[in-house]
Image 1 (cartoon, chains in turn green, red):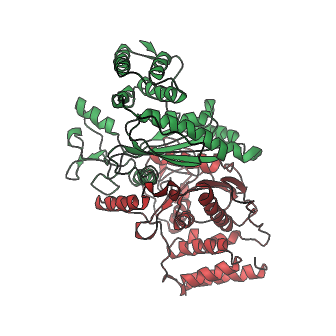
Image 2 (cartoon, rainbow over the protein chains, first blue to last red):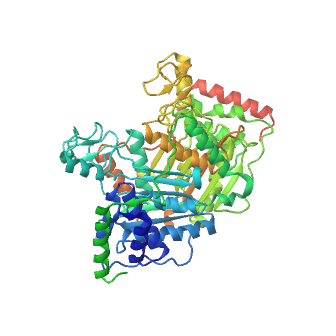
Image 3 (cartoon, chains in turn cyan, yellow):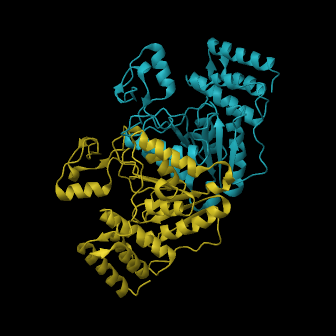
Length: 304
Length: 304
């Protein structure tokens, strides 16, 4: 057993101890604590000794494009998120478009950081073609999650939703365990529905046409506008933030958010919180071993 | 019969002849040409002689909030869109949050205007509670469409998708004609599924959980961040635009967009164009009579 907070500290230190290192480390550890190791410290496999530093911010800019293909992706996304926080507070609204991003985990911790700073955070990530358009049979876009976060404390909302009916991690798990897929999840190489993970050639959009259109929205923002679509060095990501405090006293968005949460739950809805790491969370010995192995390797590489 | 272009000119002149009047008029006439009269010139019923002018832009601002409760909604949305165009070109990214907006028609023509200007346009609108959360039984949010537009010419994409399984206009039409609703569209006052339009107390989200989450995203942006949620004077709307040209030559987003369109259609998908008004479109005599009646009433009110 290892306390999640200790794991974050150790990993953050190994990543250089900067605020970005802390955010990246907490994002990866959180995924482990949520039982999502595919989005966790496995990302450290991509960390090589020659990873470039994240492109420096030449002072806050309202809109930026960054080629991160030589960077360690979780650190690149964390650094961009931190820079974006300052830019959105200065300009009222700001966005950053990343390309060449390899595995970085989940979007939720990054938009939640923006919410912690009093901003509304919106982000999306595209990736290699695994998902067919609604009505189609060939994979064209990635599982393309969209995330938003807003508010603090008990009212906070964090949505992080894939636009496909399953993730690639789900398919790998089903393949490894031999579990049949749910109906409507995937197609085989002939474009026919399949429930056999080993036969999957394309995933289907979640909820039919609306998931397909949401995936396309994310592809336009994170893949086309970022310039990242089709880049063999990694995926495209966008992160956008705006400051509702720029409206002044007039809108009272915190009260509106609290009211929406009450209405949503009273109407029978689930208020999404997008994970999060309880202070007292602990991880098991298997995780501790994996973390030790990564830290040992990182030290051997000369640290960062 | 009346040529759609003539109808736009006549309505635009009656609305004052400004660029915003032209955009508003073309949006309403386009809905008529698409066979969507519920989003067409019926909006003019809300136009009263004492409608206030749209709040003036005090020079371009990256982020603005506007109370439009005393304005004619289609003109307010058009004016905000035109002002946003300049702001996004100046700052790289900009957004406007409107509240107190009554019926204004469809989002597609407004985001398409942003695409015409070389920008990426994103917009959403919330409204009175008609749609239940996924898994719930009480209406909490509106039909909450999300729209995006990008590109020009044959590559252009315009998405305008409601997050509910039907619109209120669909329910009114089904009620008027006695047509049964599709399964999974609506609930009655007891929270039970119903196919009888007259019994509908809540619509269901489109595609289940993903439509519910998309509707919530729109509610957060257009209802909470705008300050418009729950305002009896009208709905909340957000419009956001950014300028991919701010990236310089590096990203070649037009080529990425053309490639995505090719991949999407080759993969069996439908490339959404969000309507649009062919130059040669014509409207029938019934429409011409309705338009004449509105124009006569507007002239009697002293014009604008």
